Image (cartoon, rainbow, N blue to C red; front, side, top):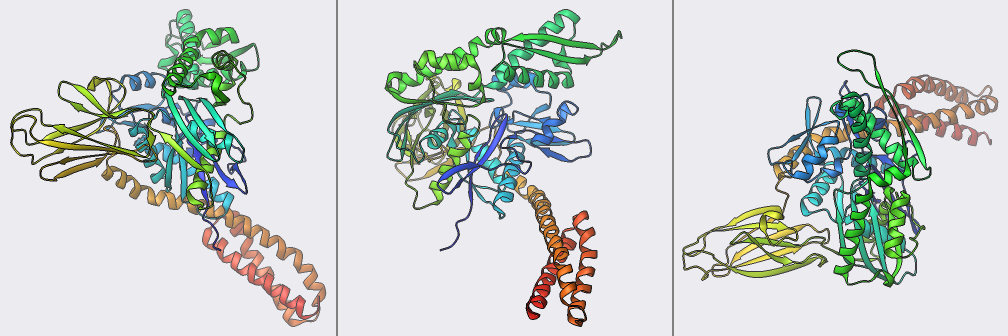
Length: 612
């Protein structure tokens, strides 16, 4: 039986990302090459042009704030002109620009990158970690996204996976992934809820679980509600206090802003276990008019943090109330309540959950790792015919088309199980109308302009006739990943037009192809770098084995010319191998591995011949 190709599950997080796989009968996190289970979702470009990813990028963030990108997940798939985007970029230390399609681009030195390109760098790092773990290429993955991500954000995340060299088997909702990890291999039956408050987003999902079937009943959330917002409240508090005292806006200084961000995050984490913490930022700035450097010193108590963030916690509860009303489920009906995401470590968040759900949450899952573990379970289920895991997910937001008068006709309601499709007949809205414009919208408002425009296309060649006489079928299809396709067909002629919806502010297929072509060399370079490290380790092991065998061969073959010749060849091979192992020249390392492998075979042959 052929060995199965390795598959992985990836939690592409706002703050940290995690990669996992199924090992034996259980999912397990794959550690990074540096030994950590978490990889910071941070990308940086140094002044020498070198790209850094993960922990090494995080360590230099304060000294290189303009070229260090964090929280990319909060921006991916969004429009630059959107109000939420403009609000979010105020607390970013790096430069954000608009692209040709009102998408968001990041300026790093003389480079301008799309958000899928930035996220692809993080995904590629996780891919390399997985390849180091398996010792072979990894091509297939399931990647998670917040349940409330719209179609454009899902498409952009899938694009990031493609750029990273991955075949994305499925885009999976994070709360659903957490439920998969929680229920996998257990005899769980009944309704469960997943409360997922991470670094950038909040989701709440209600599921019915039983006999290996995970059926999502309802889901909701806010893609601008997470740990970054809690940090932002502390940043604003510190900056406002400092400006009041010194008339200096620290947020206008990119390096000072980055220091505030790190201090706020650290303080927030400490206050999960302590009642108060000290924030000390010496030499935070030097006034332009002279007078010496200024320092920031503040005490932040848990009570003050809770006061600053009270409305954020309240928003999570309000969303829970809406979702449970839509699901027609009472909290008393739940078998289990699962907390996911780093922000659920905050005592006030835990208290709010207890107060609303009237129960203690499950503490049997790791809040930072459970989503990746669930993604690994789903990846295995999609590639393993023997898997008995069945997942029934839902679309998080309603989908429809714009109609005359500026309204929306909803074709697929939120919380509809996917995959699904629906067709509705529409009529022309004016006399002699020969074309119809299909504007695809996502959202809950009856007014078209208050929803998200996912895409648009035009069906032409309609027969000239009086208003309402020509009929057009409009069909919506949503696949298991929540990605939307829409088609329109003239019922009279059969003429049809269709699109796979992409975000109006996302990458075009041509742009994506260009990026994929451009990344080919970079991926090869990264792969070669990993191959060199692996080969160096292999070479050093062979050098050690040869060195240990040489005394044995020397003693056993005194006076034996064949044995002495083998020793001379071994010494010569070691002389070449030592500098090759240090310099990391792939060609020389590979040649030395071949030479030493043959030398060891020769040694063993000689010893076997003389009976040793």
